[in-house]
Image 1 (spheres, one colour):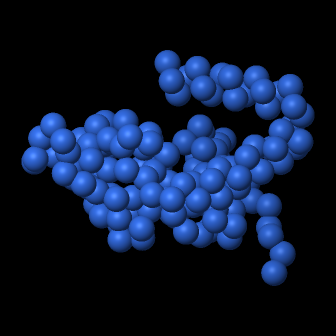
Image 2 (spheres, rainbow, N blue to C red; image 1 turned 90 degrees about the vertical axis):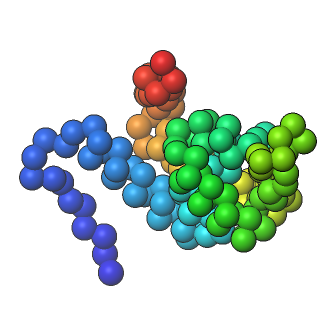
Length: 141
């Protein structure tokens, strides 16, 4: 089956363009690093070696504690993280990445680097560098 290049009927707005790019990323990740869904990757990427509580992790990933807890349960079931009682508070749970999680994270990072390199080649290294700088400035303030 050949891939049809499509153009939207209206002028593409930023969320539409970002959605199209994210769609390509999701496809590549599903093909080359299927251990994690992008939503799970989003949570796993925030975990430092010492771990975080679910509340801290939720804040970093900009999601609700309840939503983050659901992802943590999924990741725990996959063996990507371990959850333990926090030393400072028996009610809190600390989430730490496992070796399996680090391996999956590294595979996903390699796919993302490959996409980055392909897009830099497509538009030129300097244009891609500027695009990344501007996007980072907008995203991170």
